[in-house]
Image (cartoon, rainbow, N blue to C red; front, top):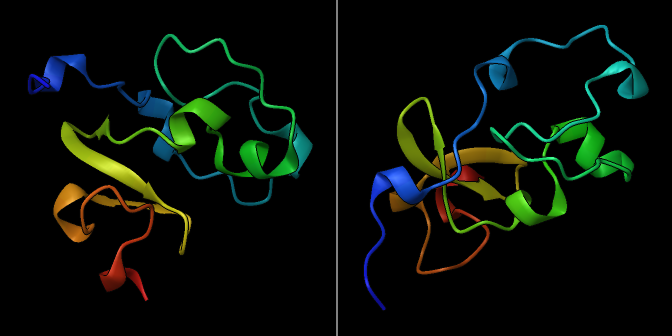
Length: 94
């Protein structure tokens, strides 16, 4: 499989990292934080983290210009180097 360049990765919108403390779960934007994604956020988990089911499982997204992956253990993005292979959790996140 050919390696993919950074330009081929999904990119998180700039508003993704803005604070939403104090907002109720259903008052948050009902759209995925990835630029150009029109996937609806229906489940509470996806609304809470503002990521659709497709991008929460994506091998990598560009966040602040750095390729990162969603950690299913701590529900945060980490640099790809933090993961072992294609695993969905980063051992360094605990």
